[in-house]
Image (cartoon, rainbow, N blue to C red):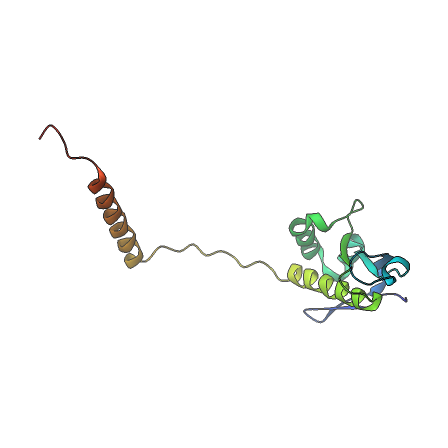
Amino acid sequence: MADPRDLRLRGDRVLPGRLLSVRFSRSGGPGGQNVNKVETKVDLRLDLDAAVEFLGERPVARVRENWPTRLDGDGRLQVVCDEHRSQARNMETALVRLEDILNAALTPPKRRRKTKPTRGSVERRLKAKRVRGETKKGRKPPDRDG
């Protein structure tokens, strides 16, 4: 199979396919005799150091921080797909997964705004605590001192 296609990312960014390396291997699962002779499993890897030029420092840092289990020993982002019987479909699925990961990394995280609970929610919580306390009090045996 030829080089993988370029990845189209948000913000009109394009990641060239030459930064991706692909390996194929035999896949388990359904497929009959096809499983034993055709290499349909796709192992797609992205060189993150080279991708900095196209994505920027922050998104690549977010990929490393948020998906550490997808990094191989050399620090490349790895996506594996073997769910389809055809090599081409597995390749396309792996490319879509990689695009999803990179698009998520390109989206800056939302800043958390501190909020106060509303007066009503505080009152409901305190009322629920009082009711629960009364329920528990009702379970105690009566005082013998009385």
